[in-house]
Image (tube, rainbow, N blue to C red):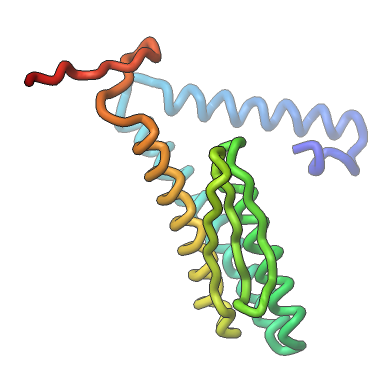
Length: 174
């Protein structure tokens, strides 16, 4: 939002802030109300807007990758690594997990280090078909989330957490 307001005068900035506040208030009223039909309508509208925005972003990325694929291997690999890093940043992996994107002989590689210093690698060799390479990026990010979730479940062990944060371990019968 700050980026949107930078080039505006103070009066225009204030108008934009009030407009945004009004939209957020309306959204909050609509989604938080007791009438499920009115709330559902608003949620569906927001979902459509979000889907359109996501599709537009994906199309822009595909166009950028398509143009880079015509100029050379290095530019295309750098672009893939940059897009992968941006998507990884948006994923908001747990803070104690370290990740890094690199370009190697194997292609584009994502390194991840767990809190207990175990290392995980995922890589793909670019195909120079932007749709396929973008899907490969998404698959690698999903794979990393799968690994994070697997390790968290193993660490938690049996039982479940109570609402107050305490862990309940069932009694074992011998």
